[in-house]
Length: 408
Image (cartoon, rainbow, N blue to C red; front, top):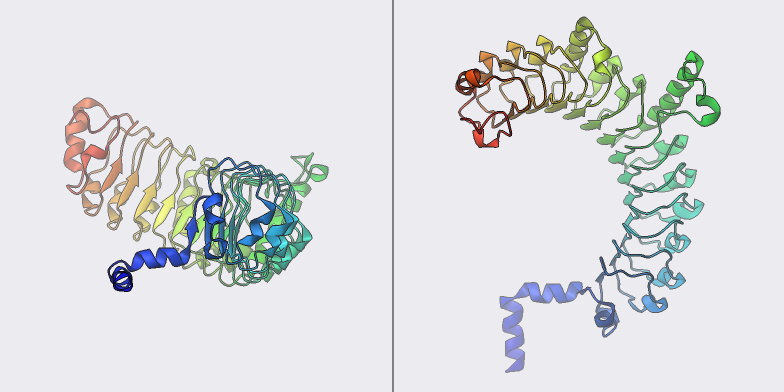
């Protein structure tokens, strides 16, 4: 009878059997009752200050999740977890990279985000099976050459550190698809060089360093996602155009006032974020020429020019005919050109926080538009009914914050 019930349970509730096979445990005490059945140990948010020395009793452990604890060191016995593939230590008290981790040769995913790690050991290059490495939100200021021996790495997150430069052997990461270098100091020269801010030769040295970095990036055949936001970069080298598979490029919050001419070679690019830069320094003619150049990237679907203090939007914005998302918030536009009506694929248009007192009639041509933000502009109450008539029927006015919506 008991065997029959077991078979019925397996047939009707296969997920129960699968869950048991995966062996996910959230308590050390419970896990130690049958250590060989433990495949995933999820100990997040448990205020742990350390791991027990006998952690290696979990000989079949594949996933160890320890984020949001108070761990500052790891026991040497963790090296005996030879089946471990995923180790998550985000949000702990690590100020030194635990050397013992470099002995976990089967690791495929390692995340040490939100700690205070200041340097990486040379032995990190021993983690040959690693495909995902997250070291964001630490205190790293340099990267050892050995990191780029991790030839299977497909995703590398070094954001929110203090990195000034990268080793030239970055090009060894032939399988790298996603690279996040945002919120570092890549556009800043070392103190010994950067004191003379107005010296043209120093700017040349900064550009030369960036050229070296992008020259290496250009050798990464599979790179499709690059985030170098918040790095005080003033100029980008022509080698940017070598990233032929790039579909995501985030340059937010730098000091850019232009892009290299061969950016048009990025034919796969779908997402481009240029917000919070210095494009306001361009004349109207220069801005028109700049937008004309960017419009040659015909695959572009999301374009962000917000927070640039622009007072003029050229008619060339109408050349971006494949755009689905256009972000123009927090500028100083007083009018929008009628060519905006040519963006017939547009789904999302953000004009928040400008100086607009009207919108062009051509906006009625945006038949696919479902989100339009005109809040925090200079739209007088008496013209709001007129504005409402211009808004495509597909737009839901309930989504309008502040200025529009409440009075309709």
